Image: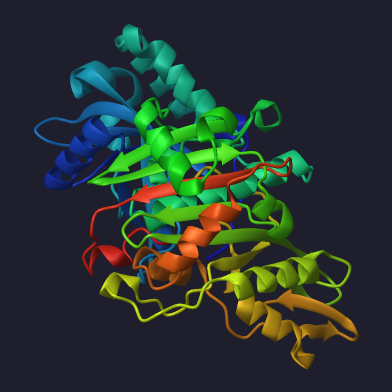
Length: 445
């Protein structure tokens, strides 16, 4: 498939999309109830922009346009040759615009597309259609203009400055937490407005979330983390779905964060377990032709030594009393080596990279394979043969197969009780329902 050349703003024309009746009803209901829906398109016909504006139509009993929305590409293809697109920010017309109103100007019937037969409107016809619909539904004219403007927004987290990088890491941390809790991150991350990154306190400011208002919840979480969240939290938010609840706090650095570099603390109530994740940014080095993190000259060795000392202080683990206490690995410390790319909020994708626990990472760095280019130690795709991708890490965490055991969890909370200044960290409390085997495979990537 030839590479798609993005259209210039004055060249742009969108689509009028219609689906078979049952699918149309399903999309309409999903947009009405949740504000989000998805659809698949033939890969051979795919030539979408990063963000498309679409009008949604029915073909029967007469052609009608019942709404407008934005459409962005989702990650993956589900093992098929079809491209999955997410439909968001719907504007539903009441009443719908039928052919008797629209055909006189733009020939509505002729321009309606299907998922198998896409017909992009030329820029002139597209502008005529927008003008017509604004005139026919004057009460929605301003909202139509808003969608037109939203389509052209560059919604990536731009810049290589520390603030932009930090917000990008926080976005990934929230996404990982929501995935582990089996809460759909798509409408939460996918609609974040990242234009004003430099003027926000944290990523929570621009996510679609409810503030944590109940004092009892904050006090409960403070006891779990052994820190005064109500006084120290920069931002807080709550996310709920299908019986699962996630409470997220962005706080100033703790002694544990300062010493080990931890950026994300996740506590799962079901397993009484902590996971701690530190982000490391890889560079795409032209000399070694690939993404890698340069170990020598960094503070990674010192952080691993601190983690090793902490682990030696952990109490001896007795045999688990409950099945939920069993772990494949009870090491709570993990590192995520991320590709340093401009994260986009146009979809829900997490940062690409490699995740590995501290114990295995320390062992790898002692091997000759760690020296990727002569005497310099690096960690990258070319020399780290085994690691967890996003899907694997989230699936293991969600099922409680990795993370601290109960006695270790108590000690971690004690370490976290006092405060120091440092880089902000994210604390996440997950109160989740018991997932079925089928659910454990959902919403991972």
